[in-house]
Image 1 (cartoon, rainbow, N blue to C red):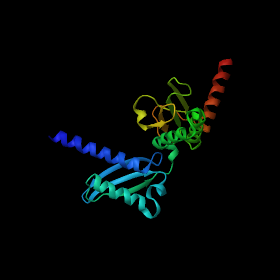
Image 2 (cartoon, one colour; image 1 turned 30 degrees about the vertical axis):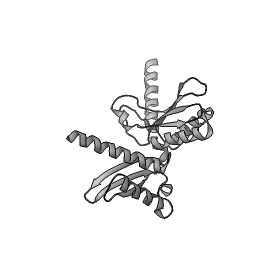
Image 3 (cartoon, one colour; image 1 turned 90 degrees about the vertical axis):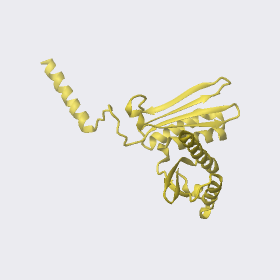
Image 4 (cartoon, rainbow, N blue to C red; image 1 turned 45 degrees about the horizontal axis):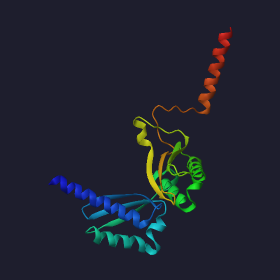
Length: 216
């Protein structure tokens, strides 16, 4: 009985998050988090476009709040907006931006869209990024295309520092799957050796000494 209640609770929470995401629209928010407090439900929406989410005078966010209050039978829901300062490092936002670009420009432009997006991420300072597109690109046969740059951990404990997300684009030839993985700047990675100018000069000097002694 208790397990059934937990399952129902989780289903309701998932449905609420999906409703908020769909109401606001693709490419505008990264995630929705729900916290339960003694005074009511606290819904945190992470976005890089707070103005679009809130609406003029807060009318859009107030409308969403009233609907979820009735639809999901919440007593006192409160919506809080969390602004994402660097959307280039948010895999969810990047994946949905690619989906929107493919839907707008068509799948034939997939290479241009992928390379431009990858360059934008790396120019912002990311340590590494990968974009994987799958579907009828560019022919009628389904294929997988991978675009990557920089350092990207694939296995081990360090994979937890990789921000990953999936999205889909509805195009005329069919559905295109999008996977994005990003390692943000400043991320500490085990097993990765970083060399600055001073260390490199020391290694060069040591190499010269070894070669000199070897000749002697």
